[in-house]
Image 1 (tube, rainbow over the protein chains, first blue to last red):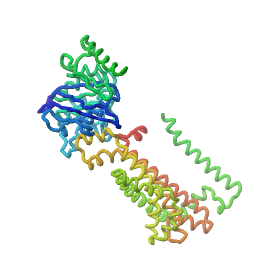
Image 2 (cartoon, rainbow over the protein chains, first blue to last red):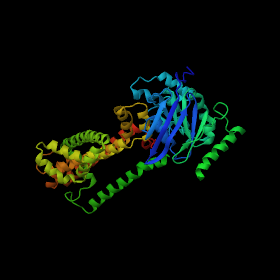
Image 3 (spheres, each protein chain N blue to C red):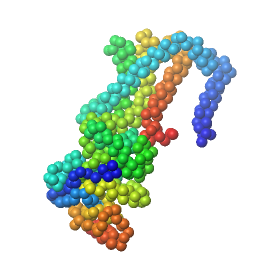
Image 4 (tube, one colour):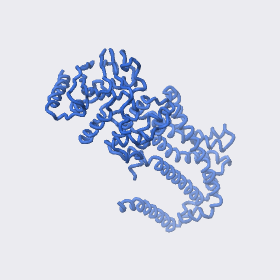
Length: 250
Length: 261
């Protein structure tokens, strides 16, 4: 079963002339963005610029002021999106297995416990299936959240700074695992860390300005997970930092 | 630390024993007559001697208290659900819940006793009025403070209103509800006793409060104390039982109960 992780039909995402506002102020105005099917796109930008709002709009949790969000097959994304946030977002009264199968229960389907168990094994938590979140470390909780995201088996995955609250070592490990396990899905990963974007993104987009605009997609060479300390990556990282920094001084 | 744990029980018990000892000593040294201040030993003796009268009265008070707690729980939770579903309903009804809460029950009880023929029902209503508010306000607070991220996740994964309520908002509100229940347990007893006092003068009750009134008319002060001891004991038992329930339900996952382990 090991690699029944991949989805059947890859799907890309199209944002067209999208306008979003928050509390009356425009966050983005008439922007376009394409997420390639089966690729990880990292969206890099400073805090408060509207990355999370954009992610929520793509998830269908809030309605954009104008513009279109759709799959590259021209149909809406509803029901084809999985989510992973900075906070693991686990139900504290439900054990790890119950949290992984949450989506099934919410849709009124019988949970596929075998698959959930296998996913927990894939994220290194085979022994923790019956444990409650309170007994798990921050890294383990985030692994459960990753397993839950994979259990959803959706072609599009939205990730809102999923590794930001972890210690450096755990983050490094989990980034590599996530890159491997999410292969085949269109992933939009929001982060404020250039190193993380370069490590995980097939493409990196910088979001800056107010209302924010997207930079040209940067496509670092090689497949993720990459080593951000390599000289070539270090140069790209300097470039990204400069792009972010330019926004700060502007 | 076993030393600290034993102090936790030892110290209060020592203080209690010293107080009772001092009380008994003062009563004996000054030869205070029992109809003014009975000593603890006499009170204990009265408790045993009058058990045949007091025990049935205790059962009456307990029954009202338990019924009131049940009705307060059902009513409080049902109203909280209503409040959590619609902000409009909450805005409309909440002021009246507050009015019921802040008006002293001693002042309302005589009126209720006039309008409600059945004394038991009247007592129940009084106890309910005092007890439902903490359940209502705590449960409402719990229901509306559900984690936003989890609510978003539930929406994203297609959970309807009912499943969101049953699997997210309700369990998340459980610690709040149980906190309210603990307060309501004590209040139910207070409500029942106060209402009995109001009703008891008409000779229509036979709960512990009625026994206290009756003994008071006869200047049977030791029995007044004995009934008081029973009421206090019941209050402590209710508190302990609800605390245990709280711990039992929450100990596996909620911070408040986990810290004690």
